[in-house]
Length: 379
Ligand SMILES: CC(C)(COP(=O)(O)OP(=O)(O)OC[C@H]1O[C@@H](n2cnc3c(N)ncnc32)[C@H](O)[C@@H]1OP(=O)(O)O)[C@@H](O)C(=O)NCCC(=O)NCCS
Image (cartoon, rainbow, N blue to C red; front, side):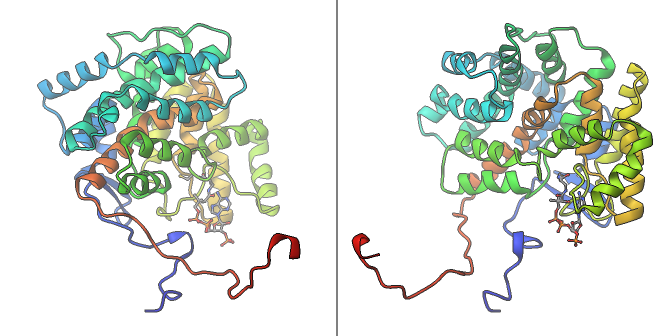
């Protein structure tokens, strides 16, 4: 096959590697994560910490293993001085994703395994645990400092999902809020060879450090065609304003060839397997808060998109209205996605470096050839 024949724009449909972490089972419309159906994990009442353990250690933890994992996360729930200083000196208008990307990179300054240049399996797992524990602190402290408030110390008695909510608002989170956040963190945790996981793997394949690879993942997730879509979807629903306006708004947007945020997916063409579980979580948030407007707008948008384009919503749509209902500021939606996806990226980095081959594809050159150099004064 010639190079041109094997070329697929956007690498669509290209097999770019092997992985035992997860795969989208398109026929059964499920996400298989290390042999488990991801939705079974949410419905069975798993905690995000259990799922992160599954990603990092290939199997679900026993009670003792989970307790040890939770202890390891708890010990790491603190920020190094350099990162705390970075957050305090950042301009208040910095985008939370820009701040998070920089702070994740800066965590390498004081990570003992990074400093030692250790990319062994065991060191990579230790680095992943530190990142998982510290990223929620960065998100919450960065947000509060930008609002002129002091960071809230994490509590030892709260789960990762509960602490995230608590440290952002400073208030004791309600059970339904913790449940919705926990479900969203599980559903966001891992999704195969998507753009950010691939970016992390490319960086890891050069034997760059875990922190460098995760920074590449954060940078790649930020775009509105990937993780940034949850923020863009909520901005869209706010622009729509009322359920009555939703159908016309979507029709007009389609007419003017706008991309509708929170819809479509490269892999799922008959619905995102994660959406029903997140819709359920979003519904309970609406019922508990008594505010159903955003969920209704999403439902009418979905009906319209299906009727007009046959395009289904993706996870970002129900996550957007669920997070909004939990009073989470919109610019934190994508950073929260990062707090979860660290687990998947770290699993990819570990898998890549456990059995590494440099990722270095080819391209089709479309530029000129045979030009003659003239010195700058002669051009
Ligand atoms: C996710 C996404 C990038 C997938 O892109 P893709 O696999 O490259 O699909 P394409 O962009 O080739 O789309 C195929 C067709 O569906 C249309 N389409 C796909 N998603 C659409 C959307 N959200 N709104 C309107 N039209 C959409 C495209 O315009 C294209 O139409 P065309 O064939 O008439 O040109 C795309 O669906 C999108 O931009 N969605 C909005 C952002 C989003 O929610 N991202 C989160 C993903 S989890």
